[in-house]
Amino acid sequence: MGDIKEIIKELKALSGVKVSTNEPLNRHTSFRIGGPAKALVIPYSTAALQSIMDVTRGIKKYVIGNGSNVLLPDRGLKGLVIKMSGGIKGLEIEGRTATVGASHLIQPLIRHLAKAGLSGLEFGAWVPAALGGALFMNMGAFGRDMSDLVEYVDVIGPSGKIERLGKQDIKFAYRKSGIRDRIIIGAKLRFTHKKPSVIEKNIQDVIAKRKLNQPIAVPCAGSVFKNPKDVPAGKLIDMAGCKGMRIGGAEISKKHANFIINLGDATASDVRALIQKTKRIVHDKFRVKLELELVDIKRLNVIF
Image (cartoon, rainbow, N blue to C red; front, top):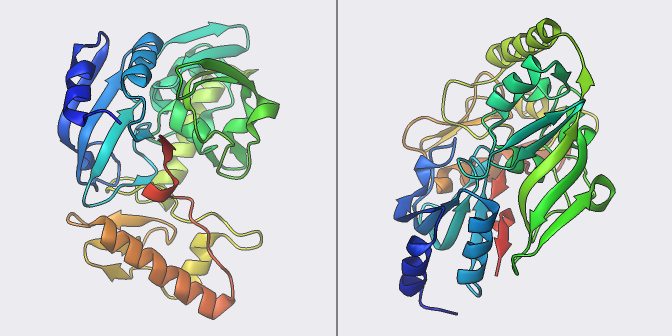
């Protein structure tokens, strides 16, 4: 393993790469939680990402998209954090398909698609994710998910080799994909044609539902738990009397019990303690074992 200081110098010399050292990770997550990264890099092209992979062989790497569904540690991360959001974008629309870079944020992407009369991604309205993270997590809502749209996904592995994975190769499942040791750099998605005005109405309907039922105006990370088969996680948590329960600066939202919000000074330790307490209470009351949807550091995409 190379010396991290020397590697940082090499990264800073690369073209098309932004490098920040001792970067507070709470600036890069919707939870506003996380200590400093030894180094955080944003690649602005596939070639730049390949160069990063070449320079950092043997260095532990953590990959995040726009940080909308992750919990990062209070102590920070000693390895390299590659942030895809803000980097590799790109959007090419042809017929009913769109080829999109992994860094493209879902919100502007939905708007571009709507103008082109392409429908299918409206379920993601108001979600502050980048495409790569949405695919990695198989983001979904209102009966739809990302796997419904995928034709193929382009990824890059530790060696810098680019691979194209068909939908059948990815093994999408509920709120997860089979992509674990590679970085998503883009995808081809297929949509249906509708009038832009109809798509816009769909978008506004989704936003209205989120505003009504979810705490979207405060720092949080979306749904904390996956929905069990029979009863939604939020309903179970509410029936167990956990809504409004608080540990430190973390609170189970009074608006939607499957959201944990940061009241301003929450730590990752607060959130984890609240998660464990909630799981215990729900299990004791209903004998249901809640499973995390939120990506904790232990489940982040890590390349060695």
